[in-house]
Length: 402
Image (cartoon, rainbow, N blue to C red; front, side, top):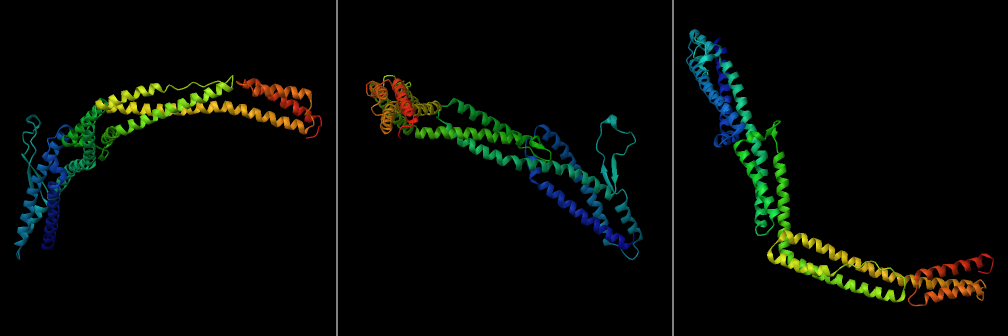
C-alpha cells in the first residue's frame, strides 16, 4: 500500500474496531445476558446458553487478538518516516494477511490431524466475519430471553397480585371448591414462574414470546378472583340478604292467604271453578332456618347457592300466588261479563220489538236463573247466554226494527 492507502486503511479498520467494541460492551451489559448469567438455567435454555457462552468467550478472545493487530498497525503508521517502504509492507501484511492468530478449538483426540497446527490464522477481515457470526448467535439468545421476560413477567406479576388478593378473600370462607381453585391457580403460577426463571426460551416461538400459557393462567385467576370476591361480598351482605328473604317469604305467605281467600269467594259463587295448584310456602319458611345455620357456620359457598335458590323460589311462589288470585277474580269477572251480555241482548230484543216473545223470555229466564243462582255453573250459564244471544240475533235477521 502507499502511505495514503495505509493511513486510510488503518483509520478505517480502527474505526470499525471501535464500533465492534461498543457493540460487544452493549451485549455484555444487556439485560438478557445479565439475567441469563445470573439464573440457574434448565432445559433448552441451559443447553443453548452454554453453547453461546463458549461462543462469547471465543468472540472476546478473537476481538482481543484482532484489536492488538490493529493497535500494532496504528503504532507503525505513527512512526512512518520519509522512507516507509518496509513499514508499509508490514502494515499491508498485518491488514491483508493472516495476522490474527488464534488457538484452534480443541477437538477429541481421534478427530485431530497429527500434523494440524494448534492455532488458526485469520486475516483482519476474516476475524471480523467470524466475530459477526458469533455475535449474531449470542445476541439472538440474549434478545430472545429479554423478549420472553418482557412479554411474560409483567403478566405473571399481575396474576400473582390478583391471586394474592383472592387468597386473602378466600381465607375463612369455608368453600372447598374455591380453596382447590386457588391452589390450582397458585401451582400454575409457580410453574410458569419457575419456567420463566430457569428456562425462558421454552416460551420463545416464532420470533416472539408465546403467551398462551399466561393467557390461560390469567383466565384461571380471573375466575378465582371473581368467585372469592363474590363470596366475600356475600359474607358482608349475608345478614341483609337473609332479612330480605325473610320479608319475601312473608310476602309470599300473605299472597297465598290472599289467593286462598279469593278462591273461597269464587267457590261460593262459581260452582265449576277450576283452581290452579297453590305453591307450598311453608317449605320456604323451613329453609330460612337452614340458611341461618349456614350463616352461623360460615359456610359461605353453600350459603350463596342456597340463598340464590331460596330467593328465586320465594319470588316464584309470590308470583304464582298472585296468578292464582287473578284466576279467582277472573272467574267472578266472567260471571259478571255474562250478566252484562245477557242484559245487553235483552235490551236489544226490546229494541227489535220482541220483548214479549215467549220463546225469548224463556231463554232469558233460564240464563238469568243460572247467572243469579249461587253457586253459578259458569259453563252452563255461558251456554244459556249464547243460546239467548243467537235467538235475539235471529229475530234481528228477520227484519225487525233495530
